[in-house]
Structure formats: C-alpha cells, structure tokens
Length: 280
Image (cartoon, rainbow, N blue to C red; front, side):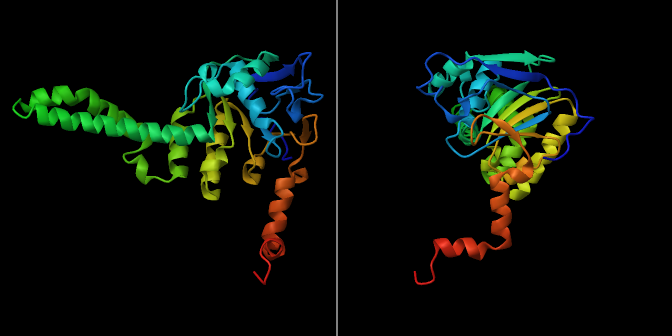
C-alpha cells in the first residue's frame, strides 16, 4: 500500500459496524464478505474495496450508500429502487460513526451512468422536438412570442450543454463520465463509486485519479469498489480485500489483479498460449 498521506483532511464517515441478524443463510446476509464481519474503520480519505465478483463488495457498498442515505446519480432514489430491497435489509444492520456529518455527495454505479446517458439523450431530443413543434404551430406569431414559448426548452438545453457538453452523443463514454463526475463533485462531499473504471479507458482513468486527488484536497471522502489496478494505486488509500473473509486490509503488491496484470504485460504470449493454441 502506498504510504498514507499525513496531510490528508480528516474523514467524515469514520466507521461502519455490523450487527448480524440471527438468520444469516439467506441473501444478502449470506454473502461471503459478511462471514465473521464485525465492521471496518474508515481512516483514509479514499477506501478501496477489492475482490472477485460475487464476494459481496458491491452489495456492501450499495447497502452502505442506503445506510448513509446518499442520492444516486442517474437512477431513482436508492430507497425506492426495487432492485435494492435485499440491500435495504442489510443496511438496517449497519451502525455508522461520524467525525463530521456531511450532506453532500452521491452514489454512482457504472450501469447507472450508462442509463443516465440515455436519459439525457431522450430529454435533449424531447426539448428539440417541442421547439420544432412551437416553431410550426406559431409560424404566424411574432419572433418575440415564439422566443417566449421556446424559452424554457432553450434554457434546459443550455443547462444540459453546460453540464454535459454540446453533443453528449459525440463524446466517448470516458469523456461523458468524467464530465458528469466532475459536474457533481463538491467540497467536503462523501462519494461512493461502484466500478467507475467500466466507463473509462486507461487514459481516462488517469484523468479520474486527478479529479479524486483534487476532491480529497478539498475535504472529500471516497469509498470505491474496483477491479482496476490503476485505481488501486491511489496514494494514501486504504485497500480492503473482500476475498478470503473476513474483510481485511491489504497492500497494493498483495493484490491478485496487480500481480496478474504485471505478469501479463511482461509476457502476454505466455498467457495467450493457454487460450489460443497454435493449431486452432
């Protein structure tokens, strides 16, 4: 693990304690990460949740977002999301300790970002369609009258352009994600992110890391579930492994994704030989 920066601002959410129910054999209480789990201390401004798919890191993060009552980006409120009923049950068994309570921040899942992009595209098309209808139906009216009627739609389109760019459809997923992420960041915020690298190229991941660095410097705290060795390298981050329960802190060099990526980049042909044999 990279050395923790002594000058990092104090965290807001300091600890999460878990009180297991009597019945732990059904989801979500049966996820592997909850076996023997009593809680975690969040001592760094960035906490990284790592582990293979199915270990429970996303379930834990979703439940924690519910317990904190963070708003979700690009989806319905977490408390009303029908897909998160199990996570709501788990959230009721979390006990939170705060150093300073914040009401700024958000929860963002990669799939919510892609859904949000579709929402923005639909909303832009609806406003443009309404402006075209007004132009047709008010063809005989004065330009001032047409301008007044179109005003709310123009204002909405201008706000979308300011937030998400003039043509979001022309932007890459990485560019759109970074624009959305940057537009929602606020000082002294608390941000939970589930696999943000899904929308990001390696180059965009570096841009994302720069944004996290600036946000931490302004007093923000992050909890990020990730498979990305690049994100796992955030200086000063606390890395919590969800492999081999219970959840425990690990160093960067211990991480299997890091070792695997290093080995692959040093000798890709050795790995690919196992997948593509020469006689295929």
